[in-house]
Image 1 (spheres, one colour):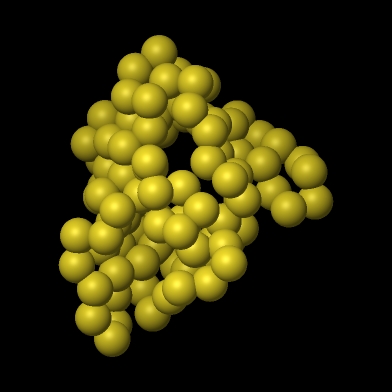
Image 2 (image 1 turned 45 degrees about the vertical axis):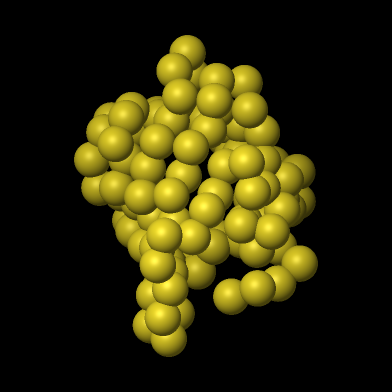
Length: 99
């Protein structure tokens, strides 16, 4: 998945590819407190949050929601958004994007 809204392309300081084949892409995700990503999209994905996460998600239409997740596994359906880490600590995760 390399598109204009590929998270690895628009936010390389946050997302890096650990593994990719024809069925999945595995990303290392690291976001410092106060950091923001540009608008990007993910296919259906499983995120394994290694640390708790408090973030503001903004959709393409400009609507925003704040969400807090404990460390652990989170399922996310396909979506487009920008993200801001509004927590006090770095957020780290492993994302498995389904193709």
